[in-house]
Length: 187
Image (cartoon, rainbow, N blue to C red; front, side, top):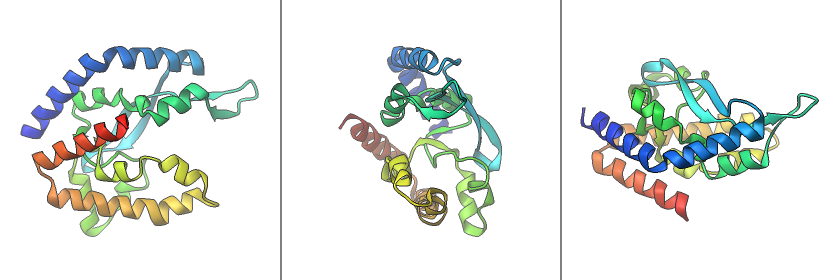
């Protein structure tokens, strides 16, 4: 209950403080991608239930229908501004500020044994795993087989880190992860 209250207060405060940045980023994304500017996708949440995650759209299609990350989209991704709408997911109770990053179907929902304990947690905006792999897109871009690298290297390590969080989580530990995230984003 205390974590949920913290999530509500933190996300409301962040929305008030960063609302203008979210609005400006949303308008840039809409203009740049010639869409609504929003990206909605089903992700695996707590207890394996699917929810719709909110992000800013960073990919546009050219006249031939080929999709690519735009320059503005690359900036939004690198700065993680494309993820700020997830503060709404936190308010709705689908996510928490700290917890395993939500993934698409076929990963967390397929875990077995002890690793399924991760599904007891609400997915979060940040975690030790997301801090360690803040540059995941760049890591995958230089791989001969990015999907295989993700499945055999990155994902198992994220599971290990998220399971460690499951067993060691505390309020002060969450504050430490938030501070590391904010410090990481600023510098």
